[in-house]
Image (cartoon, rainbow, N blue to C red; front, side, top):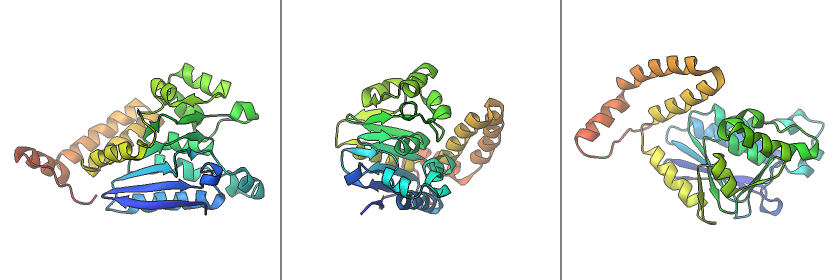
Length: 254
């Protein structure tokens, strides 16, 4: 049954795109469930990091299920990209563990995540130009930010997929790991992030997004304000005290 599977390891919420018969393509129901699961995680005070991956080893997600899309083509919901863009609106950091094909809506979702770890068998595709369609969901904005302008142009204009090695060399993904190891590697990174101050982690993410959306001056003003607030906050007190006592910090719930 196509679904978004959820599980929790320590303070990390894992969302698994599960529709293996169709390379983890999204149905309309899965799209709605993904949005709900992301909102739930962001509102849960016990969760500090979200990891998104695909079921099995063949695909992260091949995009939206064409059959589902055709059945609901008369509905505005069929073209609603909110679920795939939701990671950009969250306070929590979101990591994509990309295990195989990452195309269409799957690519949009991965681009919206804050970090991307790829398996050696990962493949990234933006086929819009070949299909006579615009690469949407922020691809035109985010790809040049993550890659160089020239590499992003070539990726979208040629509509040819990128291998994991090419994606890593271009800056699209953070790391490449052997097949079958991507979720393990991602969870190690997620735990490292989760062990840090949740307020500082959220502030860093929001500051970077603010810089992208509103420019450097807005980000500098944000930095000046948040730096003072965090310096006098409980996390800074605990962080400094734990350092002086040579122990791991305990930041409590966010």
